[in-house]
Amino acid sequence: MPLPHHFADLYREAPVFAACGVIYFACDIFLPNEGWPALLRPLFLALLLIPCARYLWRTRRHDRLSWRYQYPRLCVLAAGIAVIAMSAPVCLDLIGGSKTLTTRDFHIRESMPDLYNSVGFRLVLPAIRRELPIDNRHYRPLQSTSEIRVAYWPQSGIIKRLDILDSR
Image (cartoon, rainbow, N blue to C red; front, top):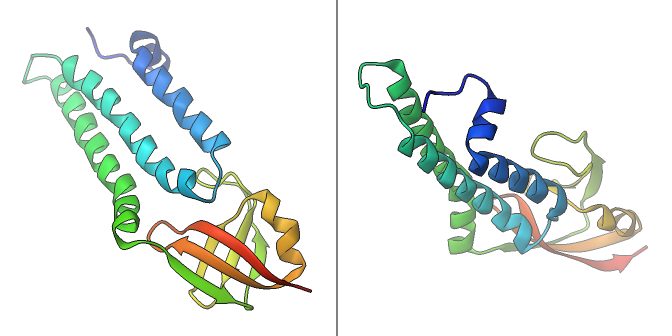
């Protein structure tokens, strides 16, 4: 099978790429930004790269002097590095556990949605010098509170649990 020249050809020739792309965007849109689903989202998305790398490896050309033989090898290597980079913070958080912080020093910052953060609000915690993404459902209650307890995973920067302790 010749190497496709456009991504549309790649999706047409390999339905596994199309399925992985659809699953990736569905996870990014529908999974929450807090709790266990948010922690496991990068690990799940990293695992989606494995069938893509397997497909590229199995369809490589056997002409070892051609650049077309090197391209699938580089894609498999890049997919392996991406799997390690995406799953390392999750694994470290699963091993190390979460941390809990009770504070009165916090504020909410509205951020522009980008590739990795589809939500527009972040909880700024100056005590740990971190900005953690929050779901939209927490925006209004956090505006009218003075003290919170936040359980978070430090490597991933994801909130495990958010408790409102004192309302104004």
